[in-house]
Amino acid sequence: MYLKILFWLYIIALLAATLLFFRGAPYAPIELDPIASYRRAMTAPAHLSRIEIRGIILNIAMFIPLGLMPPAIWPRLSKAYFMLPLVFAATLSIETTQLLTSRGVFAIEDIIHNTAGGILGFLIFKALFKKKTLDKTQT
Image (cartoon, rainbow, N blue to C red):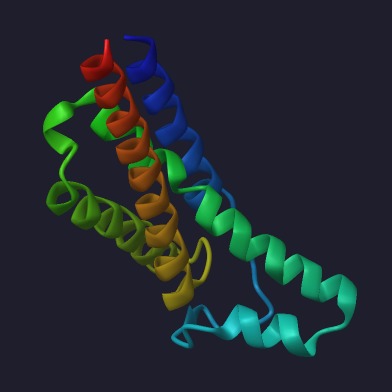
């Protein structure tokens, strides 16, 4: 019960962070270069490079709960063939909504980073689930 409430609060926070506030960028509203942040981080002065790297890390970290929580709440989602398309669709939906509402930048690398974060969350879930299963069989 508490995990479901926490999950829905996470979804609200995720949508607010990605869609509610305009996050302008000094470049075009569509970024199709899958390594644009990496290029900017390598060529920018140190303080700007840290901002780019922080953005990459935050884009990954922001989606870890999306890969971790749903299979913990709804066991039928504990298979990769359910979760991977779900995480990809969620991030693609957010990026597309940002483009259509001019609330951010549609960036291919955001889709890659967000999906990687969801996959990482799912792998954490699988590791925890496997450990829990092993603990039960050993007792």
